[in-house]
Length: 291
Image (cartoon, rainbow, N blue to C red; front, side, top):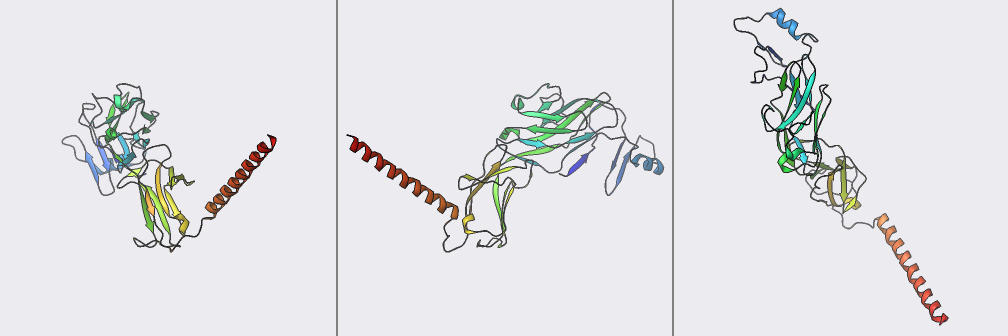
């Protein structure tokens, strides 16, 4: 997952004088005290690896994170700071600074919002990992999530945050025939996905015609699709959540040959039924002659 670095100075009275060195691919911006002129060698020294020893920063997922109702979502997050020891870590929802509000989770379990009680967990260790886990997702969980931490030296909130979108799963098809008719022998992929954002889950449940398949990846691959592969497909997360609507895979053939497995099942059913009928007849005859 791609992360972006967020080093925006917060509008709080945590520090009276600050210096921020932000380095991007295209430019270097320096903020210094009034009346001072940037010195090239001083700037060079500042950007040497290891000299700063860390900056106040939070790394969130770059793209919005999607979650399906009833599922569990994990939002990856890391952070950094120049010195000191972290004492508290917390996440908030739809609040710019994560102060004076109820929390999604708190390392000291303080002021937890009722809607997140027993559902959200800070998977942090006060060692620059700030991953958040929320289970049994509901529509009210959508919004902007921000992380804040407090050390014995200062405190910091990653203000850009990460967006959580509540969405639905869909089965999407991609085939070698494009959007045309699917024929036997075509290459077909069915993917369990959402539109416009990334999923944190990696294991899925696939269902075809109400029967569970063995595949657990997000995509079903048919290198050469066969007539027996046609049917209604749906998917969901292995950890739970709403199931997608069924997707009907149609394959253009005059008629499908009998499925060997289905034929064997029918044959077994006929044999067992015949044996039971014979057994019933024998029992009736024995009872009749014993009278």
